[in-house]
Length: 295
Image (cartoon, rainbow, N blue to C red; front, side, top):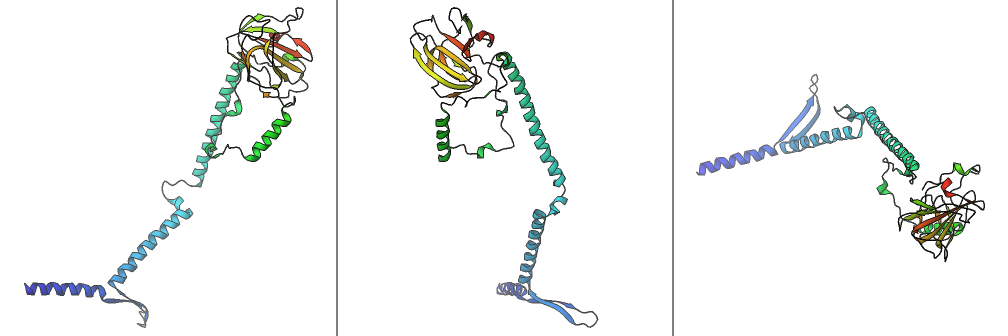
């Protein structure tokens, strides 16, 4: 046993010496036998040097592939032309989808206009190439001040509404949005001084503006109840009577088809149930609403 232990200790010492032993690598001129270059390393130093060289080669190769055009020679990696074609195809596909959506909305608006309904905003489609989640819609203090100033200046301005072309003088060329859908119970008769049309409809139905414009009067009278008047372009005024309640105030701007009141039977005279009395005035003269609007 002692001899065996002694032999084991000798082997361990021999291994330790092998790791610490120095080796010389030299380059010699074959003609003159002159030593040109040499290096002395132990096994431990050689192992560290080889490990460093391996990691250096791997890192250098990775950087060359990642940050130079050499990556385009890797099989399966898309080159510049392929990436450009992919981007152009995505843009064309998005444009095609938008054109299809616009076409569908265009035909839907045609059907809505024919049936007397409110058309849809065609250009309200969102652009899929933009990230709207990153857009902030909050109001800044400067924006709030500007809004208040503009609303104060344009509150009673009759020219702030949608302006029709000055060349439009024929009433037949205008498209009036029907304020309500129902049955005509009282027709226009200027001889009897009935300057409007009575339309019976469901109670609490919204009364919509037939054109965009500015509200010039809101109030209540004993004869006609809650009344709202809207001034439009081209010297056109629309009057809505016998409402249950009003949704707009004097000076408000309204758009075509926007709800401005609620159908009712307010007023003590000229009312026998929920209905709307609509009057259209053009340059101070009353017009027959049935000649311009399909109820």
